[in-house]
Image 1 (tube, rainbow, N blue to C red):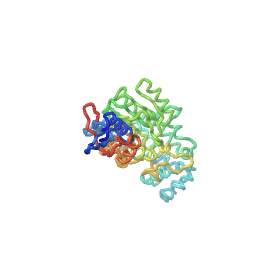
Image 2: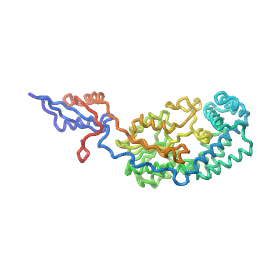
Image 3: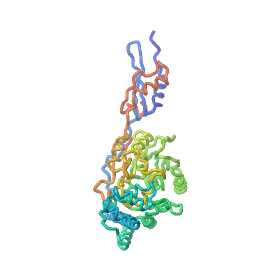
Image 4: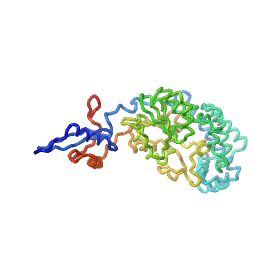
Length: 448
């Protein structure tokens, strides 16, 4: 007597079990008859119905409209001032001539010793020497030359729209280089003077470059509205503000590793009831009960990842099928950054280099370049990667880019699925075969 065929309820049970397995977004269960026998088979996909295109197909607008033609010259003046301040700092401890004569490799340790640099900041001293070599500064600047460079820096700062507070920050950092490398003061004490975020807002929001980048990121998020948004490393909320202005009320999870930024954001965005807040560390497992998200936004934070590729892959798992990652990243190590913001990236006191485990490992750098980010995104399973601004855009001189990438769909591996399904189901319901497909054929209700 032939065995009783599985019922419709049985097949629904198989489907539910399969869709509960890791990596399976949807399943279709089939009953395959062969003479007097019938066997359960299944099709599985990483995603449910084919999503709408996650990246606009129109060509990207040039970000450099509206004053961006001043960016290259202004940044050159600011970097030049930083190099002059570095040269002056080395000259005051009698190391400038040694560095010029011995070169970067030989002179680095001698310069660090003369400055009294603590071990964790010596990688920054090596960056300073490389900056001096690249700028071909044969003699240290005189005091009038240094003063003129500082005035040029402030004029460039104003031209780029940085507020006066950022001008004071730049000047204070460049005057304090010896104390910073000796850990007598911290950069945080300069950037967050008085415990407030107004100076940092000037760096991430109140300037021509950041306004362009934040607007582009906000437009990328708005193109997917309504959407569930996760912002990682939201910090002072500069990009958050631009997104909220573009999309209005939205389901938005604001996260950061620092309770300081979370508390400030709760106060600042109190009028937005759609915002929720959570602590999230990109260098720890990112298990969020609220996933999946339609958009993950990460502005000026992913360079903090110990391994950029692994972090990108972990973020991909937080995205819904068809979701998108929008990130803003610096890709050029400007001299002014090496004399200021890089102090935020120094390792703990008992380490010698920032603790990167990716392509940056063992190198005196923080940022991945534009091509490296593109390769890391592709390797982590993203597709349709777009980068703005274009290389010929004046804003590209800033070396900061908006990357937008869709969550690529990956086929689950059938072998472990067969094994796990066999453990969870009665023997007569365990699928004999599982095949992976790009997408499942659905009815109008999007049910497989």
